[in-house]
Length: 535
Image 1 (tube, rainbow, N blue to C red):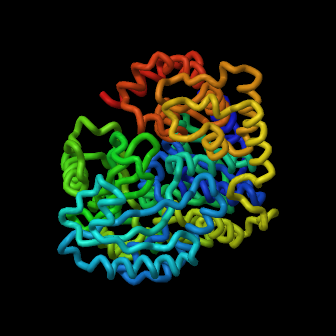
Image 2: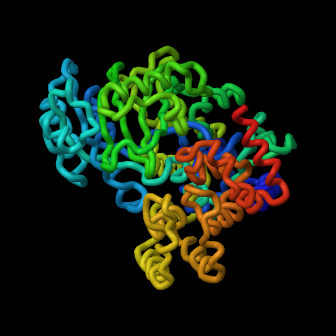
Image 3: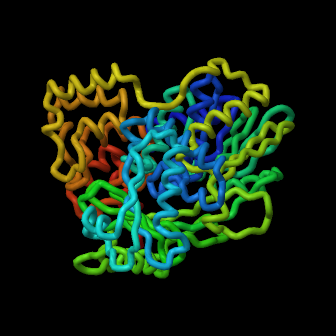
């Protein structure tokens, strides 16, 4: 067990908190960061790892919701564009503009030029913060990107939106880490068993999923930020809400890099849904699907896999068709769609990802429904205002709780890195210079990590082949990132298991040393646990 997690578990059982947040996905993470920065005494638990569900299975896009123009949700698009722009300014190293090269097939429900006019409206609603859209003929599309199959294409366009340079789970975890730096006591693999209102406080029975030990946690308020599991938690506790969730399942497949162009190739799949070919460093992410499911716990089926492969092979002009053996890894999750009706169907055109917050003022209980990465800052701010309405003071109400450190800290990091020629250590397998990745992932902590490499050059060595991650990063993760299971590091703190096959990871001789850094004497046990999850 990590020392950080062990320490936090002790604090959880011995402290009365203003707010207990249940769920460590994007909604819970921003709630914790916002509240803790404003002086609220916060606890956060998650029954699995942080960002372990929907928040680690997205398309890695932070976009303004262009598809909602078709359903005339102009207010939502306007709000999401503002949110996207705010993310771009607040996280310039992480949320980056990228061009979407879109092809429209013959027989599509709208002409290419009509859809292009929609991108102009989208650009206007985005306050001209990105490059202007361009209309493209079929021939021009082929000139720009030879991998696109233009035989059935009547035209298209290129417009801009944003994507997360790192994986989504890392973006979420950085909010968790920030909240802990502000005093939040967070712990992964802690499950809510039951919660009861006793007088003016909540007594919550929780279970350490690693040891099976149960203990009680005391708080004045509860924030249910369990993503797709919000409804089941409310049902367990007996909380009634105006909203509930429908689930739309989406999958992505990760394959070897399809094109050197750093653009998102956009199509409309056979089911009419947007279909993406997304850059992912040395790999390419393709998807997604959209099928209604009743259970938030889901997995990739043969049918899902074949749908994505068939559409990719149809829409792309590849030297040889993609087959199952080309798949390096898979992403699968559900989109929790907030609705007021108890019955409904998850239609991507009719149902949006906008969030809703239901409040029980008397019980000081709050539930967050829906939401997406793009809108996360708004969620954090709204939760803080609602908690204040419960009578919990925000001692530092104006404190900014998000964004990268200021430029003076970045300049100091870059200067020190240049003096020691840090980028010369960049592994061949890396898709970017070390300085860029260290600043984006670790912020002000990157300066201390530089010093550790300067003091001991061994800390600048690559432990696992083709992984990009240096020894100093693994040591940092062991100390500050609450790595409880090997999957936490491979899949969510890093994106190693997304871009490398399990066979390559498990056969690498450096894995044992990495696990010894992360888990000490439990290294072999944690490797065995990871292997067993694939049996």
